[in-house]
Image (cartoon, rainbow, N blue to C red; front, side, top):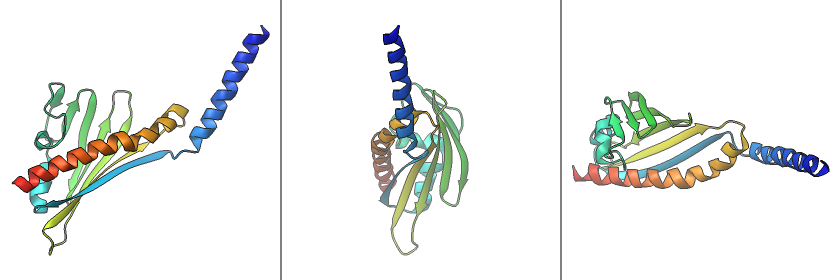
Length: 163
């Protein structure tokens, strides 16, 4: 009986310590990448504002599990994508994962009138709950999502510069 009490007490103390450490991590995680594209921003914007065009540059959009229901909504094998705003060379969307995780995505195009280069900036913002496993797993967001964003922006550059 004494061993069981010690084990339960130890587990409770460990949970409190991990929770306190997790609370030191930020409650909002931002993953952001940008790339230069030598193309007019109107042609880049046409590729970004319509989910049907994402098949050309977003990895995995041609998979069987992807269902595109309109130019602003898609189901990416369990992750729901919904474009909420398209204006001023900015596309904002909400990505809802299988476990209910919600991420806000913003793709913005910047181009100086004198420059042939446009800068495409893509970022994801996720607000985390207080759970320690959410906070600690957020350390992997930049590594995993950042690489995906880089690959997709590279694909966008290839498609936009080809046209």
